[in-house]
Length: 553
Image (tube, rainbow, N blue to C red; front, side):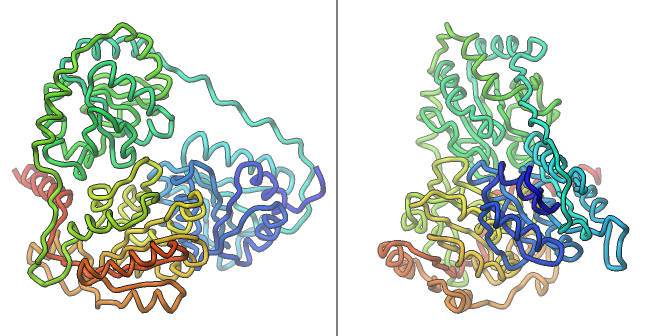
């Protein structure tokens, strides 16, 4: 290898895995950013260090490709912790390159960054002069293999010194996929063959494994109905598809899912939200889980097989090659589903005269470009996009903050996703006013990065989830309220086009912008009512109340 600094070696190795870097320059990473530019990596500047990892995280979710976030040491690093925790919780492979204390020992202003990362569940790989390349390579392989966030720490005194020559090891090949662990797939095939009302439920693990075609074919062979988690939205779309399982789905679809006698769960963790807090699947149903994890992720699972979803589905297709299951249940269930109620369309009038977010979501779906990648922050509004908008593929919906229950990462995530989307695709960010204000500095980053972006702000002048959960109990609402901010004025000052949306006809400004080519960024400051509670939140509140009563008794 040619002579390089330690930072240069780190950048050189990373350049074989990534094309994009997001971050804020500081003392601890300035040499790395210089080296990254020389290696041809594209750097997108964000305005807050918290956006560095959030952007890299969303880049992966939208494209399936690894990206790097970078910060300086100390406060730059600690600013990135919420996004780092979200990536760990959501099992997103991402790399944070950061400065760190000198190898000779910490300075008075240094903190134990590795210990902090460990507390979040992220491993730290501290490079040395002698092994900067191999340690970097090890970190990347760790992130990819375990689907997690890692930290590559560059000690301050080593960043600009010459790195030792290294012969890097050949990256390990993926282990052979176990598609029939302990004969489990054979038993799965027997259960599916004997099912009268089979249901296949796919999650993000099935999407990442590329198992959609095999699971779809398996469903058609069995006459099974299909569904997906919000993170596997439309992966199994086709005849017999019931939509989202959980609080974002319709009650009619949930009723049908509850009739299944055998449920095959592929690559889904069966979170409380997916399971409708224990009410989605009949207690008499047999639940089979196929997952890359080593053990079941929910006590409701009756048969667990640790396997790659794509390999397992392929094996099941071979074992069930002669299956001729009846499709009567599918046809009958779909007839009932078509006759059942869908999502509430919303109301033309509300108690305070502001927009009903359900009616707004329906209207936006008709206006927004058909080719769209949707990013949404956490908050009360987070169900409106997966419930009301056309989102064709799992990678077209980037839900951030749900794993760590955070808000404020939406704008930063939109920056990363905007760098990942194909030309001709419009990035659509859905955010609440509270979360938008938290990440406001990176509106400028989005305006600079996105070729076509629409920002939809559900502006209820409040922290909506708290209003519904706690204000409804009589707690003071003063800390839950936000002065109504003119986001449209702020957006125009930063270089975006914008409009305040007080009634649905005001969306004509967005329509005109789209018809003119949808170039740049448009911010729709939508003034919504806080009088409408999302059904998923009502369901969650009921589950919490039931748990309280159970504990009290």
